[in-house]
Structure formats: C-alpha cells, structure tokens
Image (cartoon, rainbow, N blue to C red):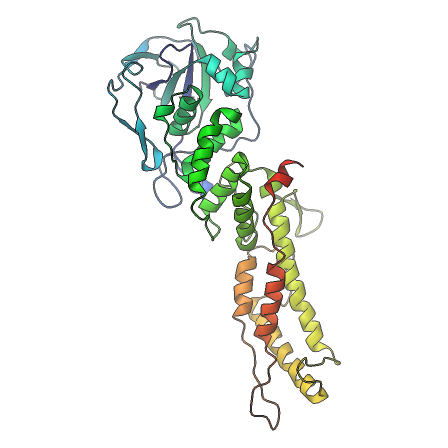
Length: 422
C-alpha cells in the first residue's frame, strides 16, 4: 500500500513515518473498541493508546519501538497528491487548504518491504524546526548514538517512526512548527484539541504551539462545559490539564466528584494518577482497597461519607429518649415528632439499601448527586397533634435539604496550579 505523503517543508531533510494511524479516540468502552468502529456516539476517526511512560530513542543496534529508524529502503512507490489548492478535509468537519502546489506533487516515497500492507503516512519536514520546537525531537535528532540522528543511506534523510497518533492532529501540529500558518484552522472542536493535547504531552512542543492553542481555547471556553459527567467532561479535564486552563479544570473536576460512581475513567488518555487514581485490591483483608494519590476519588469519598454521617447522626438524634422537637418542647409532642422522623428516615434508608450494612469506601456504584436526588424524594410521614387542625411542622424532607445544602457547599473542584506544584 503506497503511503500518503505530506510535504510540509519543500526542501526536507527529515521524514516522519506515522504507522498505524489512529481510528478510535478516547473510547468509552475500550474493551469493545475495534479499529473500524468508533465509540461514544458517532464516527470518530482516531485512536489513541495510552503510553505508560515516554519512549526514548535507541542507540544503534538496540530495540526501539518508537521513534525508530525505518528498515532499509528498497523500491520507492510514487504517490500522487493534488497539485492545486483544494480543500483538505480535517476531522470533525472543518477544513484547511491543502499544501500549495509547489510543495505537493508526485513525490517518491518508499514502501517498507517487511510490512507492505501496513498503512502509513509520511511527513516531509525540517529537522531544524523539530529540534527548536520539541525537546523530544531534540533528543532524537541532536544526540550522537541515536538512530534518528543518522541520515539514511538510501535517501540521505533523517528517518523518524511514530505510531498510533491521529494523522490530522499530527499534520496540524507539524504545520504550526514549520510556520505554515495559513493552513492552520482558527477554531477546532474539543475532540481535536484533546488529540493535539496528546501530542503536546508526548513531544513537549511548549511555546511553539502557544499562539494557536490560546486562540482555540478562547473560542472553546465561550461555551459552557458539560453539566453532566461523560466523555466530553473527561476530554475537558484532559485538555485543561495539558494546557493549564484553571477555571475549566476546577469546574469539570467538581462535576466529576459529584457524579461519578467509581474511579474516574480516563478513556485511555494519559491523565495523571494524582487526578484519576486507581484502586488496588489487598488480599490480606477481604474487601480492603488501597488508593493512589487521587484527588477526585478522595473528594468523592469525603462528600459521600459526610452525607452518610449526617444521615446516621440524625437517626441517633431522633432515637434519643431526650429528643426535643425544635418547634414544641412539650414532651408528648417531642416523642411523637422524633418517632415519626425516625421511622420515616429508617424506612427511607432501607428502601435505598443504605441501612445494613452501612456503605463504605470505595462506595461502589454510589454517586453523590444520585444520592442527593434520592434523599430529596424520600417520603416523610405527616401527623397531627391531638386536638390539632394542622400537620406538625417538623418534616424529614426539610431536615434532609439542610443536610444536602451543607455538604454540597463543601465540595470544590481541584486546583490545577496546586496539583502541578506538588
């Protein structure tokens, strides 16, 4: 299969070979993802695999999965690309101009003989631009002993191999690095910015992308972030983390704290553990888990525990023989008031499955927001004192609303600046 070629620098000294271009990005259900099927509501064209750690270049003769030199080149295949300034279709429906005719033409490009059917995309670029823009590329190209720092004997170019990136996001980033500003979109959707954030996180382009990322972020932040936890909210957490968007990071994490029912699902994005966290099972004690330093889960546990603690304290207050009604101190009224409140709360907790045993960390399948909704809809018995004509004013729903308001007021999203300075 002849590769697609993008001539970004008309006088290149480097070729980046992108193998296995992505097909699904940030899938909601990674175990169900397949190269030909997009996840989470509609066709998505890219796929990103989480990298446990950054991969470095190799010394000559050593194993190097990414980036690495290409195998020995044999017969080149000619790849025809448009010679006019037609529109180039980018992901998510927006477009940019194709490379000018002086740079896009019938270009010779090699086929790797060992993997003739593997799809690949070639980017013809300048090593000098890469070195200036990216610390990762600088390590590859500017250090002796690394395979990428030696020109290929067949064509005299430096060869860098990349894997799994989104082809369109990679093209946008490389165009920015090479100053091809007229070909850069002035607005990108959240998903494309998340894909670019993956490249920024790996290659560390730093200030080379700042001008455009600031424009893109300014446009995106004009719209409210999602109020429900879901895929877009996780993308916001990722984008805000990489590009340092404090306000959106705090809002998105606050929503997640209230709404998730377990550890934050990262959708295969390299969100750091201090934000997302993981649970590790300890077999020495049944049902005992140990959590990493995860702020979202920690605050979720604290919120749910505070709510449960308030509920059980109220059970003890209503059960006490010396309970005194807040509206009427008469012992007979207080006894009946406490009995009705106690019975209503006990039955309500039983219906919610929160009575025996009491839920404990990690509160599996429990969401703070859903728990609040259930408490607000809990039935409360109404009664009239003897010789009375009106219902007694004490009401369980009023008591629970005070509790929910108090606990909700303590929930705060994460501070991006504090986390990054730890």
